[in-house]
Image (tube, rainbow, N blue to C red; front, side):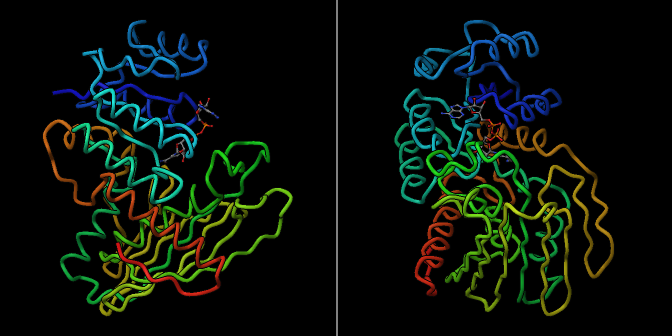
Length: 333
Ligand code: NAD
């Protein structure tokens, strides 16, 4: 079976996903949802999308009556995900939602609940969960090759340009670098260490309050504590380019990835040598795997469901709380 997908939000990442889906074996782009008629025209001719599968933000609830669309992939600014995902669920279609799934854990949980109620699946666009070198490290950790895990470092950042973009608008982004790129280190800490954190501490640095207004974080360092005794030390920033590194260490050995979460090729090594798994187009593999999850109930090695997304949102909430209070915040995931 083929998962027939409509993309909502025809921006830069939506375009990347659409291109990558050309090579999918189990997923196909069959519809679009956009507020810009000229973009719809463009995509229609590029991907042979019939008029009847094109929607805008006013009428997309009608997707309910469209038998040629199984799922909607929401790729819009963060703060819009909550309402859009719930509307898609109410229209009876499965939902794939970009990260961060929402702008806080409460909204994320409401999305999970709405999809459950509508009996549709909710997945979050965590493309690294299908990346071969990442999965090899997860396998080695599970097989005990690093011994007891004691340390993870995640560094995630890039230098952001245009000060007027939605990513620097609290209303649309829900925050700053943490929501956008820091989430990779949060999520990475969890699948690399293989446990859920029990506490968070965090410190914020803001060198450019003009560009990074109230509620939009520029740089945050944060630490996560894990029940098995591991700690992780991470940094999220909008002010350093090409900051993209994971490092995991246990009693017996290490793994490192740099770049660790970019579009690739991902590069890395462990105490055993270079990681040589093949480079794949992340979004192609992700969409084929997600088709298997949605249509055949396949279980991914690292989860990508709504609950997984809510855990990351709870950690983000706790990080912002720790920055505000200067105190350690206990977590229960
Ligand atoms: P973008 O600005 O390039 O695209 C956003 C799209 O949403 C645009 O087409 C815009 O027209 C549309 N839109 C609809 N309503 C809007 C509104 N009210 N205000 C502004 N734009 C509106 O952004 P992007 O880089 O494509 O990011 C979209 C989402 O995808 C974000 O949640 C982002 O975090 C996520 N993303 C994920 C990855 C990944 O690797 N998984 C990479 C990039 C972006």
